[in-house]
Image (cartoon, rainbow, N blue to C red; front, top):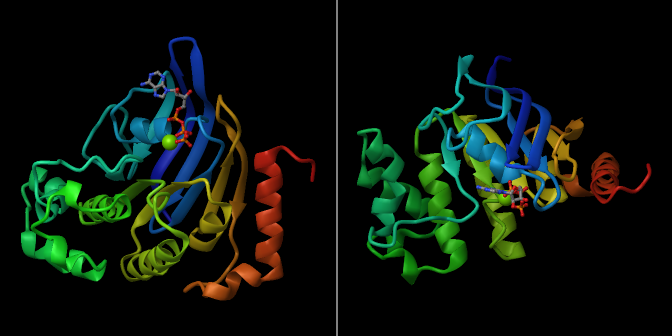
Length: 247
Ligand SMILES: Nc1ncnc2c1ncn2[C@@H]1O[C@H](COP(=O)(O)OP(=O)(O)OP(=O)(O)O)[C@@H](O)[C@H]1O
Ligand SMILES: [Mg+2]
């Protein structure tokens, strides 16, 4: 498997505040990779670096083998705050990234909106949608951007548990059909294990990789995988790592 993303020796500081320390991460072609880590450890900062919004203090970032430091427009990105444009309709928000790339297509937007149960909102404006609905729109925008690497920063954090598990199923179905490379940030250990091939546990700031866990369960993932004794063990292991308990 070739790597879509390769981050090596990455350091980042904001003035005196060191946020990332000697970070090594890779996302293979078509791989689903999650990052779990404490709040304020630098996960969103890592995405800003990968997306070229910030330049690292040290280290390398390669996308498909090409230097991506400081380069924008190479990833499909869903920021932690949905950041929809309030003056654009929902369908116009969904096609934004494609429009920038010269490939706007509202029928594609409407097709995807229907798949997430938002077909009635194509002509609405963001303020007319709930927070969770806005998050789904932002997610779609990243998804249809046509980039090989999707960076999703806590895409489901505003959703209630039921909608969240529906979205897991939905995301897994889409991903299994399309096999995009995904880098996914979450605070939810179970979500990370359920969705991913690989999970990185980050330390407190300055964030470094505490452990890289390979998730061994078959695809497509069954919903009851959460009851598998090996799943329970991995969940325990990650919980211990993130709460600093000895194991
Ligand atoms: N532009 C910036 N200028 C200065 N400091 C920043 C900037 N962006 C982030 N920070 C600081 O960097 C640290 C890491 O922030 P970041 O948003 O990356 O954390 P996070 O891991 O995404 O947290 P959360 O899980 O709460 O989203 C924080 O202490 C934050 O205050
Ligand atoms: Mg964040």
